[in-house]
Length: 228
Image (tube, rainbow, N blue to C red; front, side, top):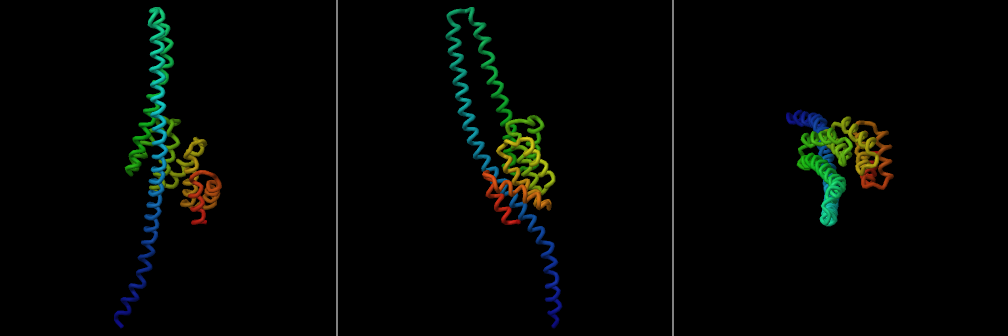
C-alpha cells in the first residue's frame, strides 16, 4: 500500500515533464528541418554555380582568343607603315580595355559572393550573414545580389528570426522579380507566415507556388498537405 502514493506521484509528474520537453523537442526538430532544407539548397546552388563557372571559363578562353587574334591582326597591319602605329594603338584601346575592366569587376563580384557562400557551406552562419550583407552594401545590384537576399533569409529562418527572414525574402521578391531565387523565396516566405501564425497569408502564397512550374512547387504542395 505504501508504494501506491509513489506510483501516483510519478504518474502525475510525467505529463508535467512531457509538457515541458515536447515544445523544446519540436523546436529542435524544426531547426534541424530548416538546416536540412538549407543544405539541400546549397547543393542545388553548387551544381548551378559549377555550371556557371564552366561557362565563364569557356567565355574567358574565347575572349582571350579573340583579343589575341585581334592584337595579332592589328600588329600585322601596323608593321609596314610606322605612321599607322598611333591610330592603330588608339583604335585598340577601347576594345581591349573595356573587356579587361568587365573581367576584373566580374571576378571581384564572384569572389566576394563566394567568400560568404563558403562560410555558409561551413555552417558559420553569423560570419556568412556578415559577408552577404557586405556584398549588398558594396554591390546592391550585383550579379549575386538576389542570392545574398535569399541566403540571408534562410539564415534568419535557421535562427528562427522569422520577422527578419520575412524582410529578406520580401525584399528579394520586390527588388529582383526575375531572379531564379524568387520561387524559393516565395516558398520560404509562405512558411515564415505559417510559423508566425498568419496561416491565411501562408496558404495563399504557398498555393501560388504550388500551382507554378518551379522546383519549389512540389515542396509547397507537400507543406500544404501536411499543414492545411
